[in-house]
Image (cartoon, rainbow, N blue to C red; front, side, top):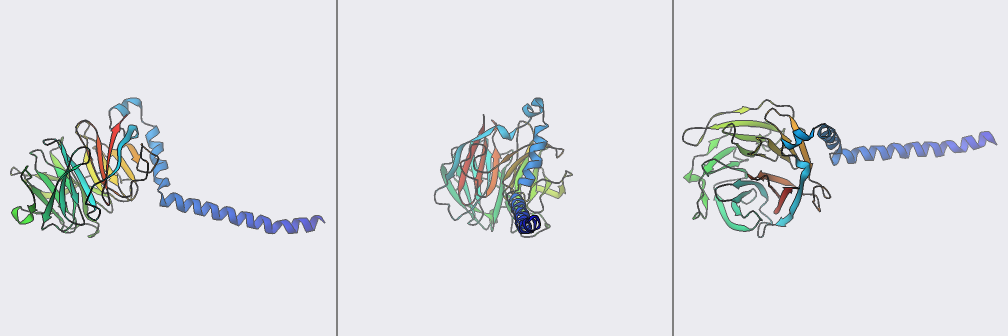
Length: 303
């Protein structure tokens, strides 16, 4: 009787063991797909920051969404690719990557004007320069073009400007997708999408890019891809955005990580996960503005 009972329990034990392994395997796959493995390490790093360090940083965990996924009308098929804050006009400028446009937005995400980018192929990044001009990166053409936009501008023609050749990238189809002005060091920061990497690029006396881009020495970026970069004018810290990892991360100039924000629904006041966050900028008061494909707009403020 005892032997029979033990014998009959073995298949149950084997099934339980196999089911346990299957559950663990599924859990691991889900964790990797949702990047929980990345975030667990980031949370541990974040817990080690002191209150003084938090005050000296942007400190992304304190931000909450105040405009959550506002639709930009008429741009459903344009694919919002990046956004920059313009202190001179106190407005925002965004580039659309699929159908090349430059769009001026109010700080509440209202469309003020939509300007065709004639001659651009795939504009993926935009940054505001100190003199008020805009720099636009075309990922497909590997070019950076500095343009002037005034209140009368209704369209831009690349033939009217001088594109700067950014050179090759590791993956030609996943090239330079992030751009920001670094006011403390008076240079442009240029980001390569995959594998994620940052470069610097100087402007000459004529306000045009000059020289070779220089790769910045920094630890490996804890993200699957680099979608956008912006620099906080108050701290000099860099905010790096990853659409694939659903993360916004804060680094200082040495590459040290200070804080991060996960862009999943239920976090930081977001009702739903930001589907594909492609652009981020920060204004002089610390307000964050994000755009996501296809045509979504977000504002987050510190609370």
